[in-house]
Image (cartoon, rainbow, N blue to C red; front, side):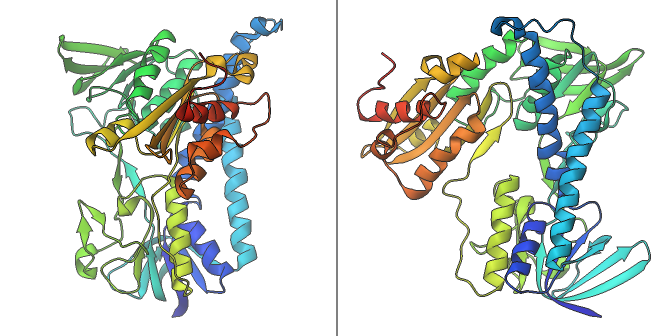
Amino acid sequence: MEHYQVGILGGGPGGYVCALRAAQLGLSVVLVEGDRLGGTCLNRGCIPTKALVKSADLWRELQHAEEFGIQAGENSFDFAKMIERKDRVVNTLVSGVEQLFKAAKIQVIKGWGEITEAGRINVETESGKVSLEVENLVIATGSTPFRIPIPGVNLDGVMTSDNILDEKTLPEKLVIIGGGVIGLEFASIFQALGVKITVVEMLPSLLANIDEEIPKRLNPVLKKTGIDILTKTMVKEIKSVENGLVTVVENAKGIQEIQSDRVLMATGRRFNLRGVNTEQLGLELERGAIAVDSQMRTSVPNIYAIGDVTGKMMLAHVASAQGMVVAEHIAGHQVEMSYRAVPSAIFTHPEIAAVGATEQELKAADVKYKVSKFPFSANGKAIALGETIGIVKILTNEEGIVLGSSIMGPQASSLIQELVLAVEKGLNAEELAKTIHAHPTLPEAVMEAAHGILEKPLHFA
């Protein structure tokens, strides 16, 4: 029986980063993965969708080329080639991770692992069963798409984020059930490519977990592009008809039927405990997720858990950070996982990003705060780019310490990092405002919003 210091079940952004860091620290590592390295993020989520976001953005820009003095002529796109490019991007990155593993001498066992006792992983591979003895066990099994329990959910044409990316042709009409991050990213991609989109959301607003001002601003922007948005709407049934599918919904207006070629289930994800016998192992659970402490230790000695399966924050970069903490803790370092300043990025058009507290959270906690907003319509670079929709919003305490920020606008996913650092290090608005920002650039909008905490922005009345 082979023996390792670290055994990891799952090769997603938590598991593979944990493996690489553990190997850097001189530990012997084995990783078990039934699919390709990279997990959902690299193979079916973050990366492939961003490849399609780029294609959609280019096509969107071509539609407005004349505004920039460019006569582009007759344009068209080939969706199948967009998918081929997406696959090339994914394969390039997966190959890169595989090469890193080879260089680090990390053993990868391809197969489905099962854990029934601490210190051992049993793996079903194509060539038979393998048993691995490990000193420290890391559960990184991630999550899977959740399908709401309604009639018709398993009909042909009802898809999840896992398989819609494999489609080679575009539907004419697409119903998206769920107005969260996944649903709205796909809505923006497919709308740009000419698909008629209807988003159905049970809650009163889209993107329920971010600062409520942002979805209020985003909603009319999406509607202007032709996306139909139904909030406070329950899905009752999906039916197969001659020309596709019919989604039956109910809201204050009564029962409605929405016809489409495809339906995308974007109703969240559930913890994947495949191969993890929690009861036999004696693992403590919290609302279905594996309970962990700040060092990602479970209730069983020498068993750790990271990523979505912990139910903390279901984000790839959180899983990676947790994986780093585990590797370093096993190596004897004094480390703890902090969720103080975790950024989120949503690749709609325009982009959205956020970190730290939201205004509604501060109100609910009865925290006295200051707020400043700066519009991209007053930013020189945004005007030059022709992307003026959105704001930078900064929240501070009364002393000016940055508590949170939300951005909607061009390159929000990159701009947020300055605010992540501010929240993480407890910087105050004056430090941001008096830091020289290059001109003309989008980050000047962050500087101007920071000035607004002190007195008011320089370039906005």
